[in-house]
Image 1 (tube, each protein chain N blue to C red):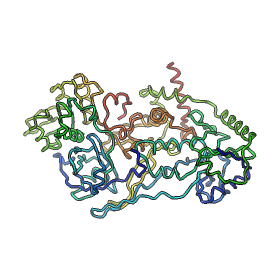
Image 2: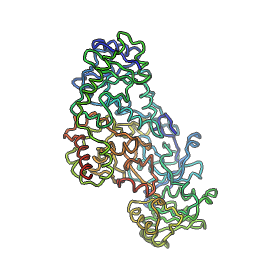
Image 3: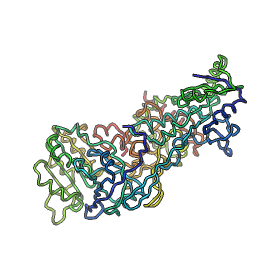
Image 4: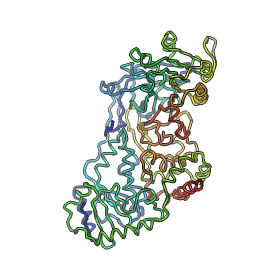
Length: 282
Length: 345
């Protein structure tokens, strides 16, 4: 919808809770609530979309939304401490104010995925929007719209896994097949050891009537895609989410393009078939 | 549409009329640099000029503009939006290449799913009076990129210097409204229309060396990995002058100025020729060297623009040719791509 307003005005949100996710404290999840009711009602999002978070005086940066739209009343973002803005975010505490613009970009192709089995493959910190998708699919009202749900999630070490309590809950459920793997185990780890592409090879999920949704570090994606190809996943049913340096988030500032597509405007979610039509510049 | 003739020395009558109740922006000689400035009297306006050093796009898309001011106190966030300057304005004496660039910028800032309201308000507050290019510069190539020295795209009124007098033609209703009630002029006659056509033919003839942007686009679509890119950027020092002087370049940065408690967020011109432009916080950079950045600049204007909008993202003003410190001539680059296209055939 075209709105001839100032598209750069953020809405205020309050930090309700900060959760340290990983043993190295580099990733924290922020629970944010809207200050104004009308902002909350206007913010209608789907899994896979992102938003621009503001720390006033530091600037703005894009983050995938980690919560599911089925969770009302708050938004969650899991933020890795990497640059200037994320450093400032990590110093935030309950009660602090941030700004938000969004939701922005494309969501996972939920309509196309309806009636299909889902194979969700995630690695490291890129798991955030996949977590949104998994919780969306697991919601009672949505579960029947999708077929079998298989999740393969990997991290460097057990201590680097996100959403540990939630993962435990998923393990108990019988309406999803959940595989966790770590690159390197510690003493207490009883689960699978090995990188994500190897885990996918071992599990060998069928490509029949299945969408694969892949988000992870570049190396994981690079080595997982050939595995999926071997399993006969057509590129139209392999879905990826890209990260790019962004400023405006609405297709104007000119820096997040891959070919003529803007990751902020036309993505961040693309099928592998779409990406193969674009130059390899990401 | 109304077309009138104004004796050369009567142009001040038109400018005086435009100054009544409006702000007038026109080319002035600012210490040897031609620039669009607000003028208070017709005497300041210079019309026998080639083109301004910096394009007039900054009137709609300022080099730096405040998006909002913020103030935080406890749980209260106060955001103050800038108020667009009110009142009618006239941008006078813009060359057809630059006038056309406004229509291209419109696509970016108001043509998609999101609309930049501040840009739109500024655009709507202006009536654009174009000045036909009777003597194109040696560096001009508007006819190669879909424009022309007498093209009217983006202009509400077009003024043509016919030697002894000016032909003033309304192009849009907005332009016609501007000419309403204008006295001291006579209606254009057949002779003046004939002289205008002659001047146009002469100007177009002066713009030799047509480049086929259609061939260039097709070739660019298949030369991502071509060795062509390995050498092209070697001369470039990455100063970004080409992008800052380009009337269609629209890239910008957004940064905060101030403390955590109060300050402002600004939108400020940026350039795809700078290494930091695409640098991720992680250290990854999808365009790490001049090679990728030059490829982006050329591809953006001559492949991505046509793919996205059906039009080349260049108006052929030649500023990047005139002011490149290392004489990298984009017309030569395009011809090289064109000849590569022909080689394949």
